[in-house]
Length: 337
Image (cartoon, rainbow, N blue to C red):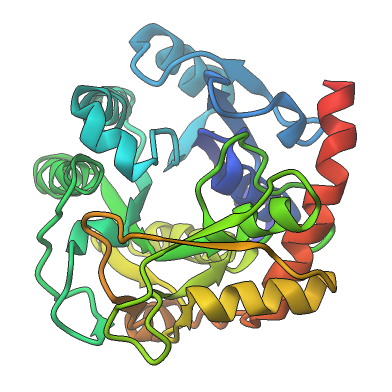
């Protein structure tokens, strides 16, 4: 597919962490792209020059209709939503509104306008606490929090709508997304983020006093929880490949896990941050958080077999180094904003 025949893509939440990297990946590959973001957690500086930004909400049907018409939108990458698991437990209605009801509004607008392709940002949280070492797409989905349920409901909506209308979809279930654009064009910018690598780097740079380790009695080699960390740029590349596959075969929809198929414990991650930053983090041992599984590792076989996807940044120290470079740049961006 040449750049001349690539259809226009609308990225929802394109001023946020993962969405902004998808915008970069699309632009780098020559796709016409526009962004809708209400900027509640996104940042205007995350959107490259020349990419149209529509500041607004994905449940605004009139705005979506105007964007689709102005941009000639033929595909949607849907990242907009709320992502903090403990907050979803405390405020479930916020999550069912932002992640489920608003997704319904977006899908309805896409059907109304005849937009034929939707890629949805889903999550390993839809699996809950799996009873297998490596999670495949066929592992039972049993969410244990409103965040996971809100995403699973949207997966089901897409499946039902695709059966009733001329629309196909890609559902990508993320494991632990980390890192930043290798050229430091974007990264994780949210204040008060809860992701381990982001928190640890903030601590290494003196932005936090310490890093909390929640539980040291898990059934893992060193007693701390094990997670599968995927570089955000490799994840963005998977979205572009998924889009190409949906366009190539409009009768096929795809559901795939996004991870590397190997895990690192909390202790291993913190040791790597010490190594990359040449600092010694202050680690505070605390009790387990409710609902945290011992280990959560993907089986990415379907993603690799279906799309020919191969990660380029599957190295923990590289992920941390890119996140560190972004964190150092971020202070100047906040000052300029």
